[in-house]
Length: 392
Ligand code: TMP
Figure (cartoon, rainbow, N blue to C red):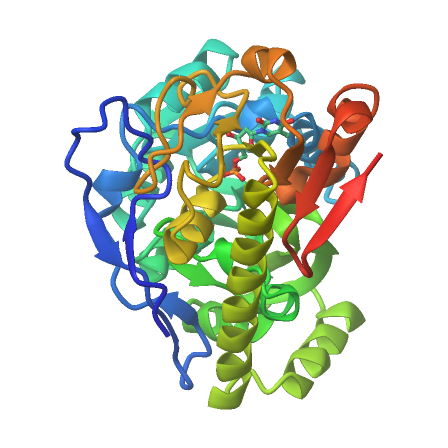
């Protein structure tokens, strides 16, 4: 299945004359290992570099989420101050930020220099680089084995997923645990949230696929949790194969996945149809509103919106501007479709008739924030799982 030529989702441009790197965004499903993955992946150096545009710290909900996991590690798994926790892709803080605040031994690993510097300034020990087997060896030599290994919405970003697991096998203490979460394939298929598919999401993972990978490295998934984060995720608790019993929750989730026919081509054909329907519903609604001379603003210059806009051919003739709170995105243009990005301050002075909620995974947080502000003046367009117009 192909979504056509795409720019890098987070490559916001300063100058409209910039020649943008394009690649074919086409996911496929492997019936052997059950991985849903991009067939062609852009070089990771093009995605994670010194000017990475995404700062996790901008979402209060995500901060609470990270803090809760830090508390869970201490309370449920009895983490001690001297136990090393390694978190990969911890961005500008992550879970290790909360462990660092409580003086727990920690190490963040992130390849993007700007976010890694930000985490370091908050007191997190940092290793600036990609995590793989050689990195795991270096970390083990310098800091010792890790009692906890965390990857929050990171694993699915790494093309050489086998090298990560080989690194985990190398790095974990015998009783150590890995906690990882990523957007969950069955939720994406159900919602038709095709905007989860972009360059950074090399994989959309499922329990079945994760079990297959873990087996290769003598690891076992002993528990899972369904989460609302990142538009619907599954969190996996992983240990060495001879450690801990497999919970009933894992068995139940696996039975659920078996019923979904994840290995059948039909499942993905249906998904593609859903994507097409969603695209046409959105375009026709935006065109209808524009005919009536309504102003429309995108709320949140998300990575996901790059897929929606480029797949649907939605540009500044339909969306006046996109508002975003991330300083590195403001006063730039959206990748491929060149819609201007404006600050929240600008948005407050230039409320449109309609806001298209692009950061739909932060809906609760945004609706709470906007309850007494934009929501009193204009309407919301929600495009997933079904196109809806919400007022007040
Ligand atoms: P992401 O979905 O790619 O993580 O990007 C989320 C974007 O949404 C990020 O650039 C920040 C932006 N955002 C806002 O502008 N306002 C908000 O209230 C929230 C929660 C996010």
